[in-house]
Structure formats: C-alpha cells, structure tokens
Length: 95
Image (cartoon, rainbow, N blue to C red; front, top):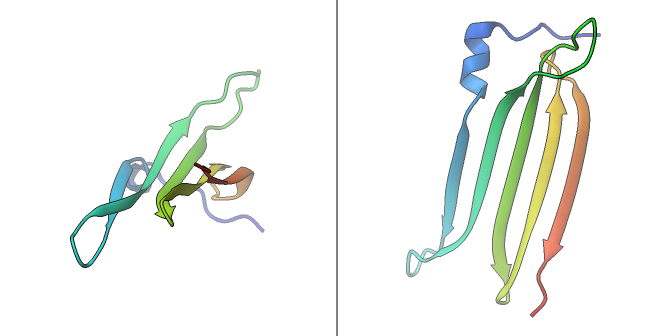
C-alpha cells in the first residue's frame, strides 16, 4: 500500500536543517548536540530519469563519563515517505 506523494508546497516544510544543543540544568553548560537535515536529491541515470528522493541525516553527540559518544543515522526516502535505504552507526571515542 502506497501513501500519497508529498505535494510541492508541503515538501518545502521538510527541506531544512536544525541543530539543538543539550545543556545541563545546573550550569547551563552545553554537553551535546543533535543535528537533523533533510534535502532533496535528484538521482542521475535513465532514461527514464529516476524520481527525486529525500535524504535525511541525524547526528547526536554527547559525553558519558567524559568520553565522546554519539549516533549517526542516514536515510533515503521516496516521495511516498517509504524508506529506500537506511544506515545507523553508534560510536564511543575511548581516551
């Protein structure tokens, strides 16, 4: 079952980047961040030319016991909002 294709006007609400800082309550010290970005990608190839896709990247970083850690998620979606490809990576930087 396919969902509706995103309309051009609605699509513009998806295409942006945002960064949020994670702060402590006590000192308002930045201890991490989360970044999300969504962009349109026009695929090469064809004929016929493949339909455009949405590329999503989410990155989250922080510290646990002083060690940097985080998560990165990359995804490619159809304009039907179906997941075409997804990659997930977690990391801890050991001192």
